[in-house]
Image 1 (cartoon, one colour):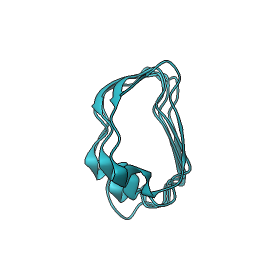
Image 2: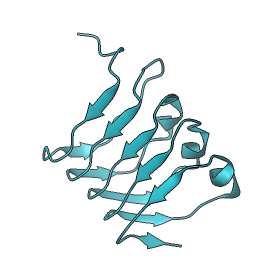
Image 3: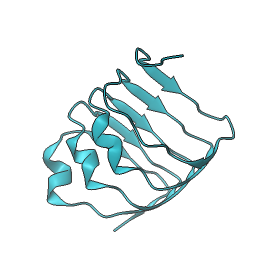
Length: 110
């Protein structure tokens, strides 16, 4: 089964565990929502393959580390939700070249 035409991936509140898989190029996803699960690890640098994503929700998971600067290359991204994670938010100048809203209630910003 091919999911290359999938536009929205909404897997909120499914008790998912493990890490976020690498993202493949050529997908048509515009919404990725995996909030309120038990996902751990980091956001993979392959987020640059998510060229059409406008909403990226990973809130309320066990993510840690720093946000990869590659997120700044997601040109269509409008909303990223990372609230209630263990992320330390360290932003580079490059990260702010793309205009989008970041929501992170109850998280630690450095």
